[in-house]
Amino acid sequence: MSLTDRFQQLRGGTPAPPRTTPGEDVFASYAPPVTLGRILEAKTAAGAQPGFDDLQQTDAVASEALTALKERASQALFERLGSRITDSSVDETELHQTVKDELKAVVDEEQIPLTSVERQRLIREIIDDVLGHGPIQRFLDDPTVTEVMVNRFNQIYVERQGQLQLTDAKFTSDDALRRVIERIVSNVGRRIDESSPLVDARLSDGSRVNAIIPPLAVNGAALTIRKFGRDPLTVHDLISMGSLSPEMAELLQACVQARLNIIVSGGTGTGKTTLLNVLSSFIPGADRIVTIEDAVELQLQQDHVVRLESRPPNIEGKGEISIRDLVRNSLRMRPDRIVVGEVRGGECLDMLQAMNTGHDGSISTVHANSPRDAIARLETLVLMAGMDLPLRAIREQVASAVNLIVHISRLRDGSRRVTHITEVQGMEGDIVTLQDAFVFDYSAGVDAQGRFLGKPIPTGVRPRFTDRFAELGIAISPAVFGAGPVRGR
Image (cartoon, rainbow, N blue to C red; front, side, top):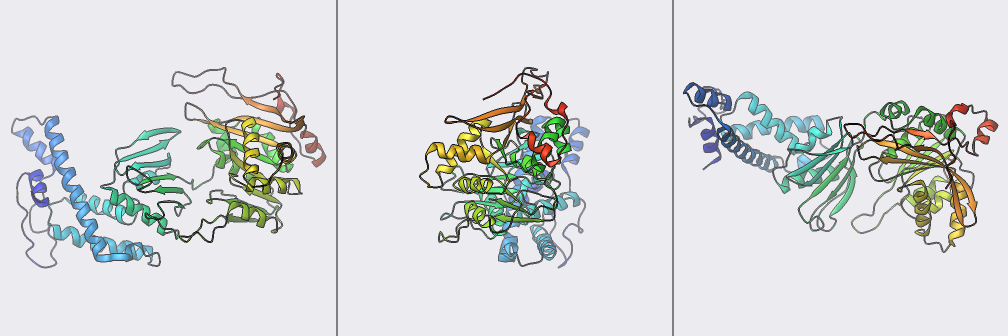
């Protein structure tokens, strides 16, 4: 059965008349097509009640026919326009208009009886497939979605409010998914093929993209997009969401202004970069800030900011500029503050040395499951620098460089909470000593919806670094530290 026959079966069997005059709109020469609603109305008028099987069968025919039409129209469009579709030098507005005009001609040639609403929707969906991001475009436009995960062309998950949800959106084929991936990576000067089957990139709005294709991805191409908020969250947003308490925020603001060196720790997707962005907002506007990232995500609002981004090697394996190279270079840029998006390798040693040699007030993040684990993680990363240093020397470097660890977790209910604010006090023997200033209280349990009722509470211990606040004239309320049991580790 041809594509036209499928549509005519759906419409009730009336054949579509041929085009009578060149250039004439194919839909103007005959009566409006019979839509799904009119089919069901006719069945009801005849005394037959349309059941689930009727709806299911009609939907199946429509879905199959529309999918085939979209595939055919998309292919014809690529044949007509060729490389112009992916040419970044072509004006975006002009390209959209050209694609729209060509697409109308392709749909006209199919001579398929569609209503004007169906026709507009079809053209819009194909334009999304060809120029946008296909079926995931609506999730990228949805402010409640924070992450989009395409496991394969017909399985797409999203994250909303910390919860993963399977969607009904699908690509028409693996080739359609591959075209979207290739469009994303080509826009940032990267390539993805069998010789280079994985790539990190970002969208025009800054959203972070990871794509991987066969042979590494066994079930077909996979795509992960971590969305980049157009408006960065503020400290007030974190307080209103329960991620921070007002007392925590007051302490952290004082710590940044007092130029303490801070490490933000947490697992994947816990909100480390968001928290780092909030902490960076406390930096005085007069300070010269150098940010160093693997993929640019930070949205600092100060004017005196230099943003640096690492570069992967090219197809010949040359030209790589690592985070470590950028950290070393930043020391020659007269920074008042160095903000490293994440330390994950040998650059950790260079960052600690910078903290220990006059570059106070530096901030970075590290993957870890607790403040104590963050210390162990930093030790491991220093060893990755290739320097044959004894473990005690590494720990002394960490203890003297880092003043504060802020740990953030994603709880079972999907919420992201700062669970620890911990002071690094120094060394006792061969152990780095830590002292909690705030900890999250889990004892309150959960409510009927499974949401945690607990909140961060002060331990009652006043950190040693608060003496620096007095020296610098930074006022902080004594009530911030509350009163409670001493927690040392």
